[in-house]
Image (cartoon, rainbow, N blue to C red):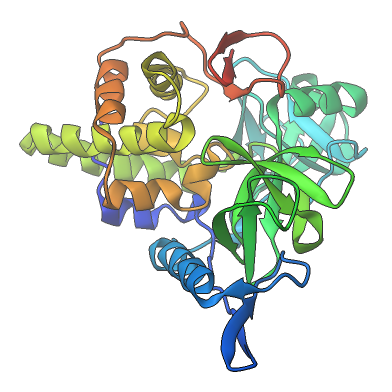
Length: 364
């Protein structure tokens, strides 16, 4: 298995998974000489200067650590119930070509469980758009209509994106409930359920929390393909990192372990030790699989994979403090230990049918 150094500078170059996060603009109003603040998501509820200061600090911390977004990596909007939806029907990967012919130039790869939008059909081929990959794929290796929608529902996820400058995350579906944190514009979280009363339940730091639906947009996300250019750049980066690792294997191992531990902390920080190892094992199982990139960094930052990597949280944890138990779990996973066999996926319990349940997650 090739190993890759996951330095902070390298992570900043992985633009395919970063999002622009802006500092919250919180308006302070004077009322009878006492400063109060109204933060979006409060429905008119006013907060003390102390709570406002805490909110501002949280928003600033998010903004300072954010990485830049690459717009081309997001699949053009395709609903999972859309007739334009197409999904790969392969065990590993399939080629995407410049024209509807086996003899035409290869322009990219569509991996297992990846999908996109149908642009055209011709002679048993379909022109697709999947992220920044546009080209022709053989119909024999694609799923359409009901089959595509079924697979997308199993492997995709609902995501909410904040449209307000600042938005409180609540412990309950009420503006009077405790604030668990502050999201800033363009922040994203995995959605659990639309409660139908103006609130969405979301996965916030591996805990069920709530945000008001008026201040977010809901979207469905599926994994996307990879262009030949992107593949080449990734391989060149991996080769360069491997050369550095040969000259400093201990340092490279330490960086890679810390990156994996940071992801474990974001995804399973409040789970049992077995649950932490399970998340690390999923990453390592993907690294070993031909259906996924072959380095830890590329797996973690692959398009549409892990929300904490997508919204910059993994980078923030990496740069600050990583829990020792998460580091130990990462070391166990790197050593080949697993508590979920060869599982390559996981979701919160209740969001996927079948699989092996461990704590709050189901693995398959």
